[in-house]
Picture 1: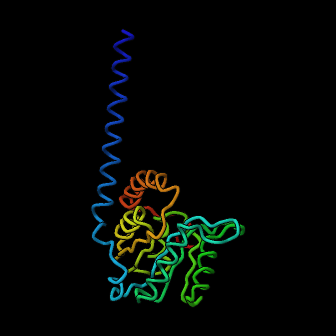
Picture 2 (picture 1 turned 135 degrees about the vertical axis):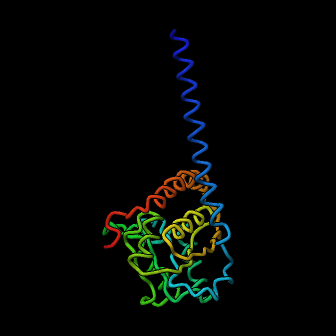
Length: 210
């Protein structure tokens, strides 16, 4: 009797794992399959005429300078700005603490690269990719954007933008190799699942309109 119960339990566990894996795979296929065509070259943005270039946040070093992954996103935005993709850049990230402010560091870096300060908008409540895209539309009034981020992240950013009824294209910024890339890739697999449901449920982030 005990052996039969253990056998049934193992079968149930296997079934749950298979169903979960299928669901994760399906969500990732939906995200990547529906947005791949919207990843374009730098030159293709010259005539796109976006409302803004959106730079997604990443970690900032203790001295206030952008990490390598964030620097690449910002350097890409400088190129997009020069190409004429838009005259407005939204820097979005975690600005929730006085001692740690990604958008402030991002703006300072861009200004040092020659971008006029008045052309840079700071979104200090971009705590996630979905929140950044939601706020780009509902706080900053964008309907057409260019996204600057790495390839692994680009699919989800564009999926969120599309799900929120914005037109969006993305330009990848693979200028360096990143020591944590395998971790980023793994985390992204599960983040895509989360964002599929956020879009499906049309979630309004907490404090999204502030």
